[in-house]
Image (cartoon, rainbow, N blue to C red; front, side, top):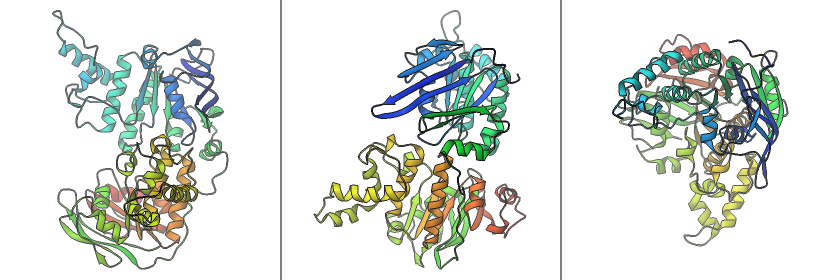
Length: 512
């Protein structure tokens, strides 16, 4: 189906919607129209109001002012069930399927087809599920258990569930954040199929290249305010960034040239059976070394072993010439190592704890000493130190006593960074430092990493974002199936030769 004519009313729309939570105004005068046969992007920094838009469309929130309209008529969703009845479905980046049920059972949960005797007609259910997958152009077994499915396959199951309920509007909220390039390509094929079949699709992503590849129009929000809606054709990534952040970004990758110093981290023939083998490299003070590769190559597992979260079976790790014992995060921290994990919500933060308390978790002994009373920590000392780091990292928050879970993803990442930088490490390991954060905050994180390297810190950065790897790294180490397959200098690194090494076809750079 081609782009829709504007004579027909939008399938789903917000019209001049405002929404506040206490003193915080989340949306102000936002208008957004979703038309049949169109993929419409919603762009904005973390905290711009995108999640509030999604929850308003999904019936979770009611507007304080303005209207939600379906087919041009004003509606009032009393809850998510009303939105679903109107044909609205939300596909989140982390689906929530029942792991012990089959794919077909997940799709038809609560509305299974029945045989004459009232028993579940499994044959009919499997047949209907197969038709749904055929319609989407994907090959999944209806009888396969949901447990063990990849995130990409789980999202396809959620999409199949939505269209089985006759959903006319699909809202995709960061659907590609945890997907490989191949999985993204398949999701986009499914998305185009649905668009051609007349679905209205709202697509939210921090990856600008995806917006320009899959979407026809884009609506931009900034600080909860509607900035505008315009066609993708004729728009450039720089134009969109300018609308999102309200300024030009001087540089997304502000890497400073720094002369490397002495070796801060030395990894020699590190091996963990079944995960990675014979991994050797060095990181010098002042360097940013990137560990690149496809998902499952073993990059995060190497980082966890270096920091002592997982034990290694053979090899050695040295920090400033001092050997570390295997499997001891405490020894790693004492030696000057810090690890910012990939999953900030599960591994980096205590979500129900305050911002200031999260920042202080790695420096309890220091805070006790500063307090001067054995076993006690002064709330003022803790808050003052947290306030210093909040200022350094330009953290956006209401109160330091608020739970960290209320912050946007980018600001949560800053809290994790603050927590570890407060330990004054010699080596900082950052795993996917900008995953799921907006372009403005991404530039701030890159600036911070560059400044830290310029201050003599050694940085080991793990990233699946190839432009980030090439833009920020002094050297790129590429992993494939648990082994380092290439080492590529900054001047020689390209997306093509990094990807060649990541897929086991290394023919550029220095063989590892």
